Length: 442
Ligand SMILES: Nc1ncnc2c1ncn2[C@@H]1O[C@H](COP(=O)(O)OP(=O)(O)OP(=O)(O)O)[C@@H](O)[C@H]1O
Ligand SMILES: [Mg+2]
Image (tube, rainbow, N blue to C red; front, side, top):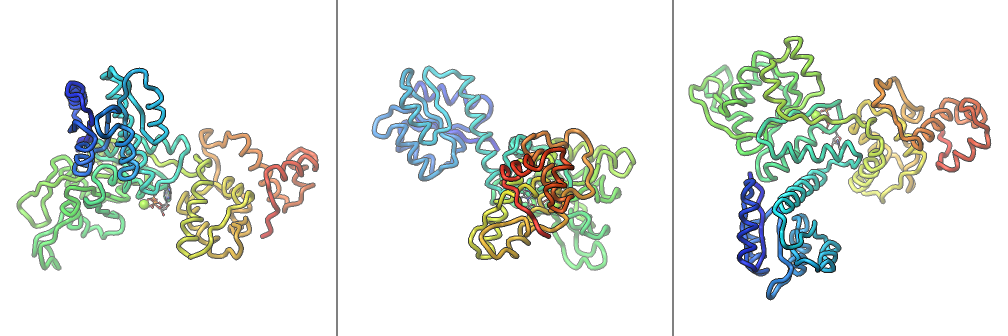
């Protein structure tokens, strides 16, 4: 679906020019000659981006912006101003305009700005879908999700267990098809092998024992929306040609059926297995792999984005305190440092579970390190840093991490820990105070 752009501009020549420029790359464009007509169209047509002139009779651009702030705060707004009226442009930016353009309009600049506005609102939509994280690696992912939503090709989401593959699939769906269209998940390993074909493509009455009536499959149920094939690495080889055909031809034939039905679905698959390796070993069809992997989103493990741990932990604390009717807890520095030091083999799911447990156990107002399982407070478990890209290069975090590790290994005896770290006891005491590290008792 093409993005919808609304132009509100009283000067007819300018309106036509903008329409032409924006229609060129395929946007749907509508325009209004004054603020009031613009607002009517806005309500009816729900544009993705609005460009509005500043100086217009009756309602000026800032008034249109104020309407947007109360009614459609998520729609990016671009103000068109006359040359030399920077003050108005600054006021508009303060009021939440995405950006402004000065007349005469530079065609390329308009296109660039609209594209940026669309990408920014798509990124916001994925954040609204509950994907927390603002580390550089997550910012890139937010952009990639926006891209994945735009393409009609299939999307493959890879990553370790608990990294947020399903959440990301839902975000792609929300950003591309909208909330009203279907999102159908098929968890491949959970369905018995001989029922999977019928689950995906449906069956006709009498196709096999137990098929007492016609039944639509997941493809048909997902028509107009997204089909999420979870754990696709577990799809039996025997079913792969039929899936390839369905994805390529956009047609499905139910088990026992003779006619194919056309379906329009976005295919999003996920796996924590090495599909490429499986292709090399002959365990997964190469042609299907290429088809499903037109665009790949790689979910980073949590240990590669430790800067997000604080935000995630606080997000889960808020969520669980709300769920369990508790006053919001405050995460103390030591608990946070411990969370930031651990390697999280179970990734975000593990963090979420540990925070939930802590919230339930907590009696006071502070989430302290005592609420964390000993496996975590004792430091890294058996996870080995596999390659240099996974090493924490943040010196500040690294120092804190080493101090806590040394203290943990020395049973929180500062003299022994100082010896281990090769610093004096006073220096260690100073650092412990600086980082707000408090003793943890198991
Ligand atoms: N970035 C995130 N922000 C907030 N919550 C997240 C994030 N990523 C994952 N979660 C939460 O972590 C849990 C695990 O996520 P999800 O089920 O999407 O992971 P997965 O990669 O599909 O895991 P698996 O491979 O085990 O199926 C869910 O409760 C999800 O809501
Ligand atoms: Mg999953």
